[in-house]
Amino acid sequence: MKSKSIYIITIVLAIILAGFLYFIIKSNNKEIELPKINFDAEAQLPNANINFKYPKEGFYKLGINLTDLATSETLISGIHIEPTAEFDRNAQSAYVVEEIKLLKNEKNFKNMEELESFYKTDFSLSEFEREYAKENGHILDINDNKYFIYKVTEDATVWHALTIAEEGVIEVSLAYTNGFTPYSENIYKNNDGLFLEILENINPR
Image (cartoon, rainbow, N blue to C red):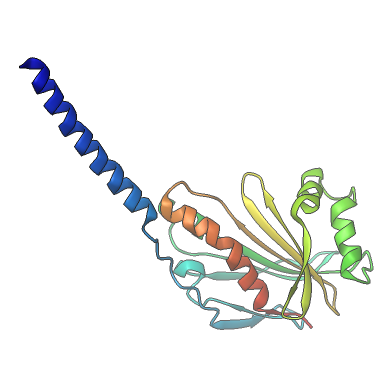
């Protein structure tokens, strides 16, 4: 009698466990809807003929703040874009920081192949930057503009893209960290495509 009771309890527990696992699998497979990002506002890089579009509600609708970067011997112009919403750990990867810089073409790059070679081999750059540039860097054509792009994944993930323009070298970056919730992980994956959208909405001359 005792063994029969144990058998029944075992069967019941197995059914409960199976139901729980089914719920977990269904939850993980459920498509997570992300906020739609519209590049519906336009601005111009200060003191430069470079136009760019950005979402007026901010990336992932987290608000937006645009700040001019201080110029220097190498930086002609630049803009820093960050969210304004209070930090939410569930959406950690949505808190992206974008920068667009116009740098002096000090190395006098004539073509993208020269620029690519510099970022992959020049010892004036940090070793880990060179390694990532060599590992995944490549030239990509976006709206008839050639960019050298590479992705750094250290403590944070940072996308870099560079192109040669009439006024100098344009550098675009997108930085963010990874969260550990399903929602944040989906955003993290989506940010690869978001970076390409950002490049599509820059109009260098």
